[in-house]
Every structure is written in C-alpha cells, then in structure tokens.
Length: 169
Length: 104
Image (cartoon, rainbow over all chains, first blue to last red; front, side, top):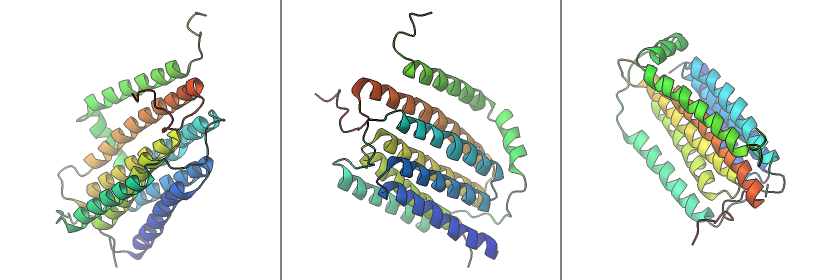
C-alpha cells in the first residue's frame, strides 16, 4: 500500500495501539487500565480500516470497545474490596522474559518468511461477502456459535445468581 | 515508503507479547482477562492482515474467522467475569496468587 495517507495512518494507529497497550501494563489503577485498553481496541479498529476491513472494524468497536470493556468495568466495580493497584505477582520477571521471547520469535518469523503476497487492491464491500459465507459455507459453525453464546449467557446468569434464588420458585 | 504485511505482523507480535505478559504476571483477575483480550486482538489483526495481502481463492475467509474469534471471545469474557464476581463473593478477593484452593 503506497499512498501517503494509508502509511501515515498506519504509523499513527500502530503507535496509539502499542502505546496504550503498554500503558495498560504500566498504570497503577485498574480502572485507568480498562480505559487504556479501550483506546488500544480503537487503535486496532483503525488498523482494520487501513486494511479495508470495514465490517470487522465496526464489529471490533461494538463488541470490544463497547461490550467487553463495560463488562470489565462492571467486574471491577462489583468487587469493591479487591486490590485495584494493578500490581504484578512474583511471576513478573519470568513472564517478562517469556513474553519478550515469544514476541521476538513471532516478529522474526513474520519478517523472515517469504509470504505469497497477492498484488490486489483493497476490498470494496466486505459485509455482503462475509454474510454470504456465514450462511452458506460456514453455516454449521455459525449455528454452533449461536448455541455457544446462549450457553455462555445462561452460565453467567446461573453463576452470579444470589444464594437461595432456586428455592423461591 | 509504504506499508507491507510484515508491518502488521510485527504490530500483532508486539500486542501478543504485551497480552501474554499481562495474562501471566498481573495479580488481579480482571487484569489477566485484559491480557487475554489483547492476545485475541493480536491474532485477529494478523488474520485480517493475511486476508488483505496473501494470495487466496477466497480472500475474505480471514474476516469470517475473525467474526468467529470475536464470538468466542465475547462468550469467554462473559463467563470469566461472572466467575470473578462469584469468586469475590466466596473469598473476598480476586487476586490470582491468593486463590490457592487447589494447591496441596
């Protein structure tokens, strides 16, 4: 992708995404960490737009920046006496070394491999093609995904139901 | 100057490493979950980047996979955060290094 706008947008969005992901690690307040995580999700959505993936970008903002972040804030606020300092456990150094190693291996492999690059322009409208694929070739996984979401919703409700709610029925 | 597949893959690798560190090292259960969500995002970013750049008869299959990954991630987040609230009710803490019921 050669045009200047895409290049500038990529570097700015990559800096925002990685920078706020690092701030999630560095900040000492768990609620601030969630806010930085939302900024990072938004940056990933912008990167999707530079890849001409419009449907996935909108889904990213709806599900991640909207729903999952709100769930996390709910979980933090529903645990008021828990530790909110965003501290590390004793595994801090080994986890850092392992993360560094994994990141460097993936980065090295992705730079070193000779990918079969296709010389094609960006996609025009992805939503129609994704919808057709979901209802044609991937219809079984699509139905299983709906069952999975139903099970997850019921499981979450049953888990957090107060004690003794069963006997009232 | 232009942007190639490798740029996106390196951003994905950095995001994955940060998420891995969060998931392994953070003390609060919600912090661990944030790391897992960041790792999901890194994987989705590489899916979409491959879908855009690499030769394929159906180039949009990567996007379909991303939709499924987001679905599973949403289900996982809902159940895990419900577990966090339940743990807090029973143990008054959600620090993962103090949840040692299974340690013998």
